[in-house]
Length: 354
Image (tube, rainbow, N blue to C red; front, side, top):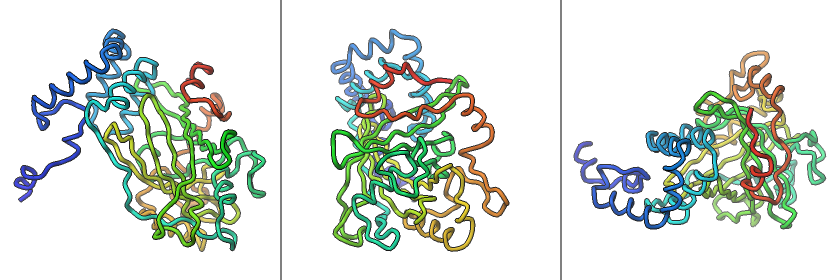
């Protein structure tokens, strides 16, 4: 049955693969190659003429399409203007492989409806993101730090592979409703170096359907967009629940790099310091977090990055002593990027490697 099913059923991941394949057939492979040369000849020549950039492309081609962690490590290891221009031309501007990955709309995750006994409005939704950042719009319970949140654990292998994840949310100066999001995290490159990575997303309020909101308000729903190494990613984030004392927050996200053919989704538990919230190791607060994650169609055992809760001092693998010592010697670049692009920021700062 399975053999017949495989022969008779179209599989989109094959049809929209960014690599040459037997399943596409020689004609389709040839057409894609011809389109690349026709649309992006100078960018391709620049890549094949530079040994380091060509090595990056060869390593990306050798990886399984589903290995997002491996792909990202390669991209970070060889980050350059030539690689960015190549990706921007071949994948983003001209979509030479005809990829079209959608943002997944299931599970249907409900928005937080009330906080501290009141309906959630736009002002509260902004405070949720700003979190513990030292900012005038921060909540009175904010710890006034250089970051908004630290990731405790997440439902994606990337959150196990890339530790020390800081989230920095702050309002945009050019819009009364939009915000910026700068994630900062540690990556080990393919040659063993440890470096800080910093990305830059624009956050805009998103209107959601009635089935995931308890009132007419869509406060707490956001659309995040970024141009990262030549690839546009679009993500829908949902604020699922927030502790009354701001000690933790649960997000759900679903996104896609449409022209690369990759969709992804997951959930995050965050706290001010990256550790499991002390008041939520047992009892009602623990069950509240469990229920929030279940709204994301997730269970505790599916999450990456956290340790056991039934020990005196539960630790997150995202924030190990070894990682902490490295951060002490190599402080994270937590200053907000602001209104400039991440490309301009990289050029101005000349990178942030250890």
